[in-house]
Image (cartoon, rainbow, N blue to C red; front, side, top):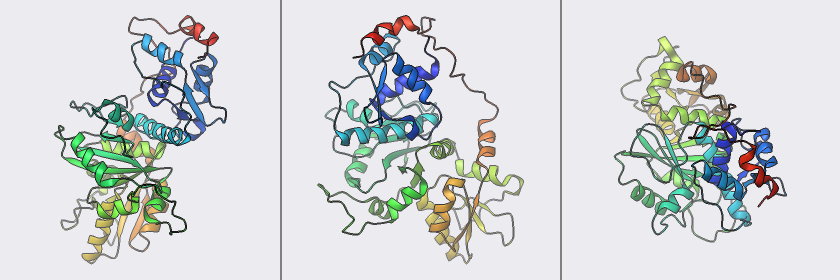
Length: 376
């Protein structure tokens, strides 16, 4: 047996993250249980006893080192559930950015903007002298050609927002990118919205060891764009859109085609005019920048329009209809058609083909036969 491209990529991701949740929780079809079973069979990874975690073994790190990829393993097996839970969330987030085409194997933001980059927080921490991110709660930094985003996972524990924002701006100070924003991630768009806009009653509120800001408070006090991006395939699509230059204008043109008309001058947070009477202002809400959508709805009302039109992915519709009931008509777009127009006819790499090293050879059973006998 030889390892294919998919299996090597999965091994790299597992060694980078140190552990990940079971494939059934990934919500992305880039890898599957068959890939895991192959790596497990040869002693490169193992499932935890409760079946919730996948972890690479020491031979996996050795094998990757042998073919030119260096990752640092844990000095001792990690058993603290709090850390394992955070790592599992970090893995889901990282897999989402990876599936969206971002380079996730970075420990600093990139000065050459050839592609999008996602710097996970564990990499930024380990690469920073003095570990200035040691007590922060962000999960990563996402860099597109025009914007740098600080990435959080929305939960009831909250964040140290002012501290994290200060460190974020200090960390990106050398970048010439001026635009910044926030990404709130979660299991789904409605789940993120419920966490942000449903403040628990005192009886529901878990006791906090430190004085953190809730995500609802962060949303209310920040002037930065705030995007609700779920982990999984819906989030992958959204990140693809956000990585495009002038993506709002491009999305509006792709959605409306020949019917696309420029937005009304007094409504800069909208993207077009809906093609049917009464020609309401319209916004491509696929990026789920909820602060912008709020402004667009409010401004349209101030200009005398009864409502606006929001174009959205099917997974976003229920949240948008609930939040803007009576103030917006929400129309689901054909996401697959948009994907075809954006991606064209590119066939992509065949990830089932054998992985070939820089020396021009495949990684076959001889490379890891010893690892199968000695599962460290």
